[in-house]
Length: 184
Image (cartoon, rainbow, N blue to C red; front, side, top):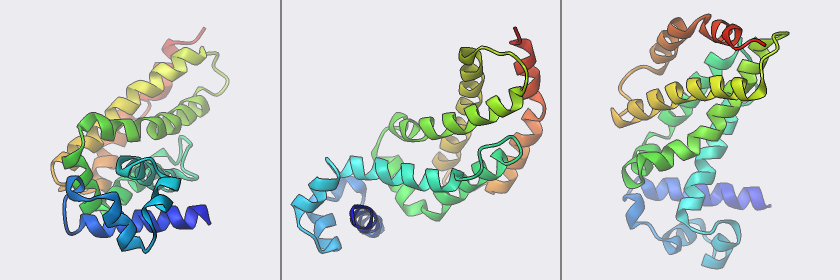
């Protein structure tokens, strides 16, 4: 039942964000829209920003599900772009009301995990220290997150498929090449 309530709170927040900015929405507004009392909100989330973070993480997790390999990372990244685009009013409102660093904080663990899985797979039989694999994944993560944040800042005008295709063309083979430089 907890997930159902969380989803209902998320939907209420998204409904309200179509009408007013995040900074003007209260817990009471969300509770009223959802048909619950304020204490029920606080049972699930500590504040509105906690709900925003949970919502962003859940959307990204769904987008990445089953797309954590070298062969499928592009599809996973495209699905993140599409999930963001599908929630455009929500994402733009959040982006405009919180610092860029906060949005980056939401994205970082998910993208890092995706890329670490890809790096680990790409390393295959190569002996590369865990901290070097993490470093390589982190570098690619900065690229992906930077592209995503700039795309959001530019009102999501560029076609996500074109962005992902261009990125794939740029980095094709570079991960294996980078890993080979760190081989023990």
